[in-house]
Length: 248
Ligand SMILES: [Zn+2]
Image (cartoon, rainbow, N blue to C red; front, side):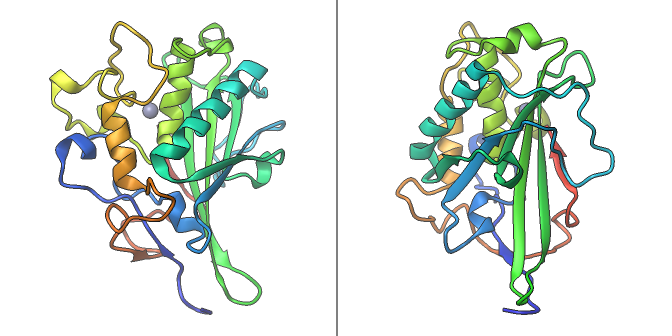
């Protein structure tokens, strides 16, 4: 409808502290983007650096993902379909993909990977509202190059990609939410924790699965919980059009 802001669904707190400790509350969800067909999310691998619509973004020493890194991304999204009810489809055109992957020299010696959330709003020529979510995931290719170069399942590199893909699905770091009981704040319970246990994870852990089930459908249709109420864009709780929502 011309003149109306698009309605978007954002991640809502569930009231369950164990789920809310890894839900990125107020983050727009993929189910917002195209309500009539919002169950397909595309991803692609950058061949040139892409980033959020933000003058501060630069990709130092950009390089594409190698074949093993690409394979890890494909496998994680394939296994994420049954957890979310979303359909993930690879596209050769990273510029048009919902989620784009690349590598760069990420500033800071301790940062292995980074996910930028971006959202662009506007209207089409016929007045229809546009709400375009976009994620950019970068793996470090400097200090962490060796760790991330061969991310087979069960390696720290694979777990790192799993963590970043968790961000693309609406999950947050427990280090930021700071509400998970300390006994549970490790990767045995959630790969969104920075506390490693004795084995690197090749799958989302139990609280990740619970949170993804909460946020998304597992039957191919949008569940009424976790996605309501719908708010109008823009609201004060949401970022300005084109801004970077978070860097995690
Ligand atoms: Zn993170």
